[in-house]
Structures are given as structure tokens and as C-alpha cells.
Image 1 (cartoon, rainbow, N blue to C red):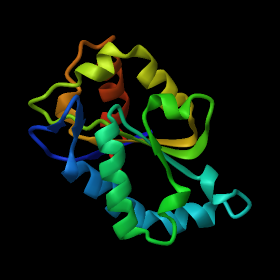
Image 2: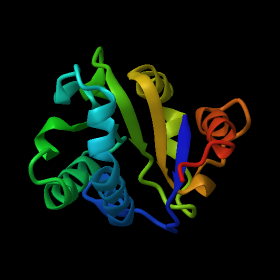
Image 3: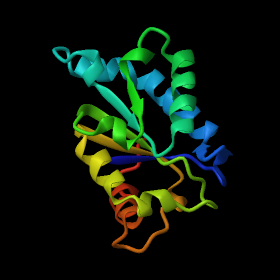
Length: 158
């Protein structure tokens, strides 16, 4: 379990959804650097089972997908990107959670949707990474965002 700090104050609203372009670009950049190493670590695994990206918002799914096409044109289609409902019952070796929210937004959806954390964490067979602003995880210690913050603060992705 780990965390990649992505400084942002606010996410952007798109209709009833949200997106964070800075976060999407950072996820794509990280995968651009690390995707080959992930694939090499699992030589007998089909590529579609390697990496999944879970986010609370459909607009962020579209934004991440567009950024991955730029960075990994040959492999972007092997990376599953979706909301929690997309990943019901599906596991991947590496799961990335895109929180979307900036530090001034709070992480209300994460705390309001108790199944989000359960589904996101339980879909990761080997590695679970949170990409986002740690300061949006402001909930009480027993809330989903509070527990997530406690677990990932000590394990920042470098």
C-alpha cells in the first residue's frame, strides 16, 4: 500500500461529475515510467490483469483514459479504468485509486460511499496505491478517508 502526493487545491466539476487533470497526468506519467517493470514482474500474467485504476467519478475515468493514450499508446487499452461498480468482482495485480479531490474539496464521496474503500482495496492482489492530495483525506480516524490516510502516510510512492 502506498501513496503518491499530488498537490491540488480543487477538483473541477463536469456536470454532476468531477475530474482532476493534474492527478490524471501524474497517474499516466507514473505508469509511463513503471508499466514495463510491472509487466516484467508478472511474465505469465495477461496484460489485462496487471493494472486497474479506480476513481469515484466518470469524468475522471475519461480524463485518465485520454492521458494514458498519450503516454502508453501501445498498452493503454490493457489498463482497466473505471468507477467502483466497474470493478465489482474484478482483481488486478496493481490497483491505483484516484481520489480526484483537492485539499480544499474534502473527500466526501469516499466517506459517504463505504463500499468504495472496500472494493478498491480488495481488488488489489499485490499492490494498492493512492494517487491524490493527502490533505483531502480529512475524515475522523475511523472514517474511510481517515483510515486510508493513516495507512498510506507511512508508505509514500517515491
